[in-house]
Every structure is written in C-alpha cells, then in structure tokens.
Image (tube, rainbow over all chains, first blue to last red; front, side, top):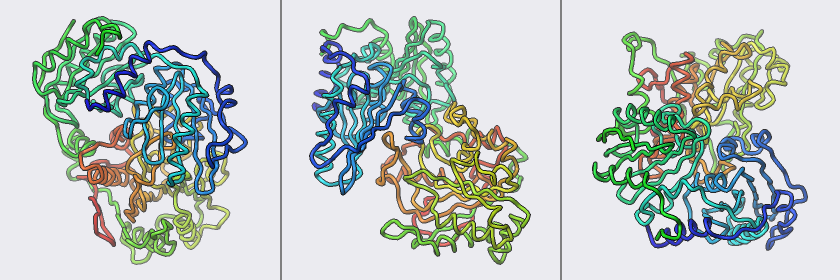
Length: 297
Length: 294
C-alpha cells in the first residue's frame, strides 16, 4: 500500500469505528440544510426525490447497483451554471455499510478529504458519510467546476452530519499494510461480486440473499474474498461450490494458487496467490478472531 | 476450519468474456456445418463530425449499403421490399437514453425506406419507453430494432437483445444473473417472430461506465460503424467483441466487460434467438477499415 493510501484507509477504519456521530437526519432535513448557492452555481428550485421503484427512470443503467446496496431514496438537485451544471445525487441507504459499499463500487480517482472517504475524477466526485452515498457530477470542465464540486461536496457532508460505522466484516481482511491501494470492496449482492470478481455464471458462491462480502487485493497479486452467510450450512455449501469452481480453469485474471476455507458462517476464498503457503496464511489470518480496532496498526 | 485442497489454476483464455465463452460453449457436431449468421459491418470515417454531430446523408448511405449487402440485393429498396411488405404495421424500436440515443437521422432513414417500401406513414411508429402504450406497436406485424451499443452496470452491455426490455411492464424482473433472462422477452406474443432487421449503432459506442449517470464522454470513441443483421445475437456478439477490444486498447490490459454480458450467450443457448459464437458468424465488412478492432 502506498503511503497516501495508508493515510486514506487506516484512519478511516479507526475513525468510523470509534468516532462520534451527529443524530441521523432525513433526506428532507439534509435538503433544507444544503446551500442555495456555491460560488457561481445556483440551486434550481425543485429537488427531485426518487424511491426504489422510480429510480430506474432517473438513472437508467445504474439503478440496480444502488438498489443492491439497499437504496431507500435518492435526492437529486441541480446547481445551475451557464457553462454547465453540477448534479448532486444523495443516496440514502439502509445503513452505513450500504453507503460504504456503494462508495467502493468504483475506486478509481484521487483521494480528497470529504466525509468518511471521497474520490475525485475529472468531472465526478463521490463520497460516503453515515447512511449516505453522494455523487456529484459536473457537466462542465472549467476550474470553477472543479472547485465547485469540492465545495458542494463539503457542504453536503456538513448537511448530512451523521457518521457511520464500517461493517465488522472488514476486520477479517488481514495485513492492511500489504493491501493494494483502494482495492477494498464491500458488497451484499452476487451481481456486484460478479462485477468485481467474475467467477462464473450466476451466483457461483451461492451468496443469495442475506450474505455480505468483502474483497481486497494484495500487493503480491493475491486476492482475498470473505463472505459471511446467514448460517454455517450456507457457508459450507459455498465451500463445496468453490471446490468445483477451483478445479476448472479460470475464465479471466491471472494464473496462480487458489484455496478456500469455511468456519461457522464465514467463507474465505484466496485466489491468484503466488504460492500455496500464501494461500494458507491468508486463509488462516482471515478466519482468525479479528483484533479490536485499537490494536490494529 | 474446513478447507479444500489448494489448486494451481490456469487461465482458460486471454481475451475476456467472449473468448472464454466461445471456448466454453463448445460446438455440437451439427453446428459446424450449420449456415452462418450474416452480420454486415459498415463504417465511414465521415459519419460523425468533429463537433459530434451525425451526418444524416452519410448514415443513410451506410444503412442502405449494409441492408443491400445483407440480403445480396442490387439496391437498398429491393432489400427493404424483401424485409417489409406494404401491408405490414411496423414498430421501430429505438433507444432514447439521453446520453447516447439512437441518432434521429438514422431513425429518419429507416422510416424513409419503410415508406418507400410501401408502408403508409400511419402504420409506422418509432418509440422506446412508450412502446407498451403505442397503438402501432400493439398492432405491429413487423419490428425494426435499432439502438447504440453501450456498457451497462447490470447486464454488462446494453444490446439489441436488451432493447426489447421495454416490451414488458416489469423490466426489473429480468435482472437476475446479469440479465440472463432477457432473451425470454423475445418469445412473448407482442414481439415473437416479428423482428425483420437489427441495427446495432456503433457510431460512438460506450466501452466503460462510471457513476450513477453511467456516462462519460471519455469512455466513448468514434468508431463510425453500424452492425446490421437479421440475427440480433450475432450482431450483439460482434459488438461485444469490438467493445472488449477497445477496452484492451484503452486500458492497456485485458479488462473484461463487467458484469459479463452473458445474456448474449443465453439468448443463443437458452432461447434460440441466434448465434453467439464468432465461429458461426459471417462478418461482411464495408467501407472504412482502419482500427476495426475485429
């Protein structure tokens, strides 16, 4: 992990676990607390509010992603500028894990200090805070748009107020200092897993409903997937599915050593590792009792 | 802790979903001798201007050339008259996604040829999201399927097969397993057996998606092409291969389309709508040949 990445992720984990939080706010309260103007960008009068059924009409092609992270509602506001608007979308999820997961769906970009984790690309900034995943899209490319994105993101984070707790499952991802920068993803739906780690058709690890997963890649190329199922028998069934999957050639990715293990409701898969020993050590570390946050590096 | 034996895996094939899928699907003995599906790839470097506008005359010429070649006719009109009869009621299933819609100039070119084939204007409709409320589509005896190819967060690609999802009142119920069941829609009475022509628009395809609005101009490029076929699956398979090649070129590594657009394969193997293996597709190339990526 690069120094910058370590600065980004490790304090993030500790802060999210230990930090204090303002009381939860509704989207209506957040909307009322948002600024009417940011620099030369002026809010258009009417916000749009979408529920899980109506969201398809707004973001055709991506609605399913946010629904898979437990989207409850989405507030959309447009800030007008003569040379291109900024579109602010605030997704309210069922919990902070859903917001963090939506944030980890796309990890490209430059880290910026907004909310509980933020990434900025050309014309697009995302962050998560509390139960909210926030996306700001600029329809212009001037320095004013770049500054406006960041200023509006910070104002939105302030309006949200509350902070969230990261999913406990992430504590089963060992060796944070050896993880590739911005490779950690959290998810709750097999289709999201298929996007990040295509293992085969359908739901090859039988995640189904009620499972959660965390995925990370290490600097030596090994990948680690930890899935917590609602029950131990489902984790054991997943292990049997993995046995069959591993025995077949991989469809994509790198060649390497693969292995899997299960203990109670936890299932762990290691892939593309440089050696058998590496597989064994990651499996054991992921299934070991996690250390409390204050003992982590 | 229960473990399974550690295994050294090999990668099946480089080239992502399509190469892997082709190899996995295998070929029944009879398929090796079965007739191939013809797909015409027509390209013109001048169809999209430097301002991003589509040149109406050029795109109409491209369509004409492709349709004539598809049916081995000397003139476009002769080909259209084989596709459509004057008594048909024709729905042109378009796509109105605001970032990358079916070009109106292409819709107009299709409508013009339908009229010249003898179909009265009141028996022609062009629509996307409103098809279920459109009386022409309700009475349609023939469909023309035309849409741009783009990446899609849930189905991998927004394809010709996927374009018919607006013919059902509950599109979200076809989302399982990366939209695997999409091909089943083509067997509903409203559309079954009615599609006469498929046009996959490859003028400025989108090869990668980011964000809720799912679109960035950075991830489109001017390919200047149309893929025209009677077989929607074959056209989609060729389009998918081009997108995959562009992703490799742009990212400098083999980055598979994600999620894998296997609804194209399922449309072949589970729903019998056409052929998805490039081995069984006759690709006819017309026009501009640079950087064809296939």
